[in-house]
Length: 295
Image (cartoon, rainbow, N blue to C red; front, top):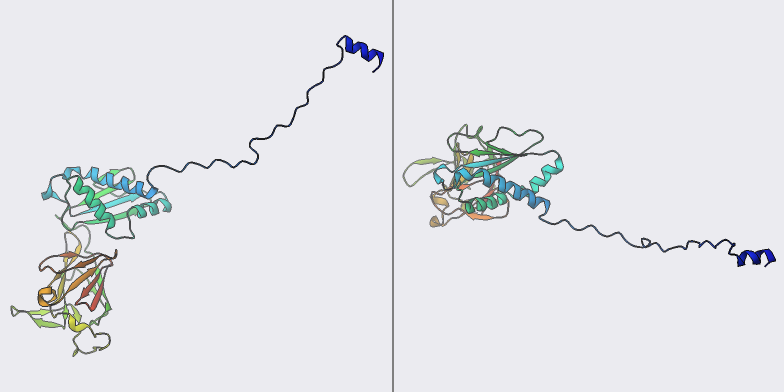
């Protein structure tokens, strides 16, 4: 060190050393982002279902403890802003499981002392845009309450298609504008115990009928000549199956309805109406099966 530098040091004239910044470890390096918390509450479909149930129950409170004024049906109208929203409502209403949402809704209505007719029907319709005229409205939901005082719209066409056994026709159109009662039995005509001649509209072939195929009609003999009847209710726009004397267990026979949700219903009570829904299969005598479709 020179003499001048020594003097500068003695009198404190040397520049102070600037501390160099040191690299600090980055706490964020090598760390994973925190996961987003899972959404709480009901899943989207369950939320939609709860919304619909609360809406219907709330709007039907005028019918509490009024069994004499019970509606025969409900039509739910839903306005959707996108296909995704419509699909979420379809999942909520369990449209792929016919009758299941109606059963759940019926339980909620009963819990609130709201009675509907015995064979009441539930329908749902989706709209892109405005709702139609409804009995009740709230947001994007509308409810039309159907009563039995007058028909709601034109008669509902249906058809029966043979899926097991052999019938005179492979399918039958049910047109309520032509008739509202359709008799089912083996052979074209038969005489009942009262002496009246009954004419069947849905004919299961006898083994001596023209066109009978022993292979297709092997089980036809199990069907009674007067087995069952399908009736159409104009006010309710509803088809129902009634089992005639020949199709009852008392006559050594049986009749069943297989619903689309895999439920099986035994139709074994005389005079009782068994409502039919789209996709039902009617089994006669355990061997002939007719598929019911609305059109």
